[in-house]
Every structure is written in C-alpha cells, then in structure tokens.
Length: 195
Ligand SMILES: CC(C)(COP(=O)(O)OP(=O)(O)OC[C@H]1O[C@@H](n2cnc3c(N)ncnc32)[C@H](O)[C@@H]1OP(=O)(O)O)[C@@H](O)C(=O)NCCC(=O)NCCS
Image 1: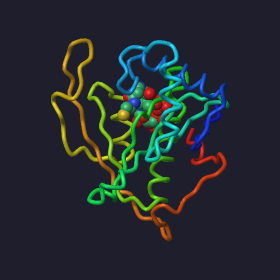
Image 2: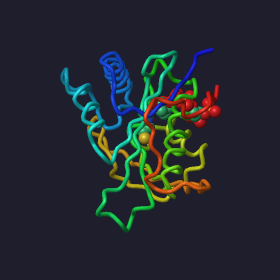
Image 3: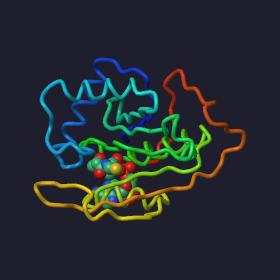
C-alpha cells in the first residue's frame, strides 16, 4: 500500500523543490493547476514555491506519496490590519499530481490545514474553486464545506467563462488552543493515513 505523509515546511531541499515543480507541472497540464493554465517558463515555478516560503501569512503543507513530494496546500492567515476578519483563514493551491491521486492525499492535506487552523484558534476555513474542478468540489463537500455563493464569471479557460463556488467550514474549537501559539519546528506527520 502506498504511504501518504503530510507535513508543514518552512524550507525545502533541492530534491523536494524539483519534485514539487514536477508535480505542479503535471497538475497544470492535466487542467488542475490552481490558476495556471499552461506550465510557465522554466524557473518560474521554482521561484513561485520559494516565494511562498517567504510570505509571513502563508503556511505551506506538502503531501508525500512514498516519500516523494506529490501535492501541496497553503493556509493563508489574514493580514494584521484585517482585524474584522481575524477569525477566518483560507486554503488555497490544494492539488495532487495526477500520478498520486486516489490515495487520500488531498483529503489528508485538507484535514491537516483544518487541524492547524483550529490549533491556531481560527474559527472558519474558507475556499473557492472553479465549478469545473468536480473532484475538488466532491472532496470539500464530503468534508462538510458549505457552499454560500457562486460567481458566474469566476475564471476563463480556453476563452470560456467558468463559474466558481465559495465555500466555508466552521472549525470546532479545540480545547486550550489560542491563536498564534502553535509552533512546528520539525516535520511531523499531521494526519493519519486514511487509505
Ligand atoms: C481534487 C484533487 C486535489 C483530489 O486529489 P486526490 O489525492 O486524488 O484526492 P483523495 O484521494 O484525497 O480523495 C478524497 C476525496 O476527493 C473526492 N475525489 C477525489 N477524486 C475524485 C474524482 N476523480 N471524482 C470525484 N470525486 C473525487 C472524493 O470525495 C474522495 O473521497 P473518496 O475517496 O472517499 O471517494 C486532485 O484531483 C487535484 O489535484 N485536482 C486538480 C486541482 C484541484 O482541483 N484543486 C482544488 C482547487 S481548490
């Protein structure tokens, strides 16, 4: 059985970056590149992922299948000025390379993001997704995300306008959790293997 593993990273080895770039490219070509419609020129994706690691409001989760980086997700915290929405975070760039799908990795990534948000004291997790991403919609709805809105002009793909959905999930409070008090220094397994 393939082994899945999800961790929070604040740095990536050259090998992991190469795998993450490769997984991203294959997901883009397959039509699920979190906004990218075609693979960008060489070097852009590596700079993109290295840049993510530098953004204070972002936490990068990577998913491994049998040790290789095969997917990712990001938790985005509100900027400090946004006190009015300081209770909510969002999840973005949740994807798994086509060769690694069907092993529960996306579910593990999503649950890991939820757990981290809960540990940090946030109460809602928000996301949006193209309506053409039916596997992702099935995943989120199976995890209890509620659709609260639709944007009929959400994205354009191949010159065609595609609608998109906005989802939210209330995170049950975890006892003793206070915002800003979780620090993860070393890679840890954040979820149990679900398959
Ligand atoms: C959506 C995606 C992340 C799922 O990755 P995955 O690792 O194969 O998903 P999992 O194995 O964790 O499956 C979890 C659940 O997702 C749903 N799901 C996954 N693949 C599916 C498919 N092809 N059709 C329908 N539902 C699917 C199911 O509910 C599944 O639960 P089940 O196995 O109990 O039926 C992956 O297909 C992907 O990267 N797609 C393109 C990018 C994308 O759409 N990202 C979301 C943008 S917000």
